[in-house]
Image 1 (tube, helix red, strand yellow):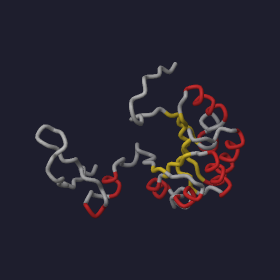
Image 2: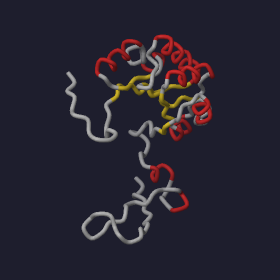
Image 3: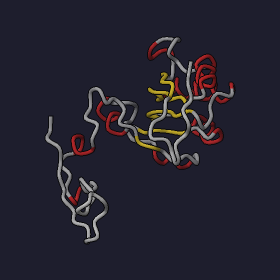
Image 4: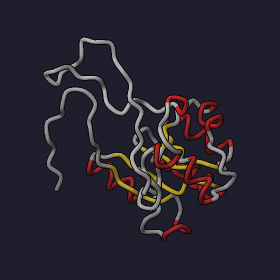
Length: 182
């Protein structure tokens, strides 16, 4: 049973989603996204994150999901590399969202490992970024990419604060720090 809490003002800080895999060849039919898991997510009123979306078999699955009416804006496809133009068209037409995982795609060697930014934009999808396998990869930019420096494009470590802990009235100063490497 799911108990709904009152919605906070503004966007939610945390969302619950159903995690699935793209095809049964990855982890068997019980975890592969399809009508049954889509129904579970709909009954719970939650979105779906589909991992391991890459290649021909995922392209075929995407076309099947579109035909079955279970590809929609509540579905996020993770990776989305090596997909056919027809799959991208179906994703764009249904409002499906995409989370690209460029660091793990390259490390694991998924398809070409080239993030599908152009494909997503051509289909009318604004792609998001995924940290993907956070249990085996560092989850911060500085731990993945190196120390934070002004030239690396990292944001300041802390916003300036005044004596009472609120915003500072003085011009902001920037300190660049990086957490210790594991």
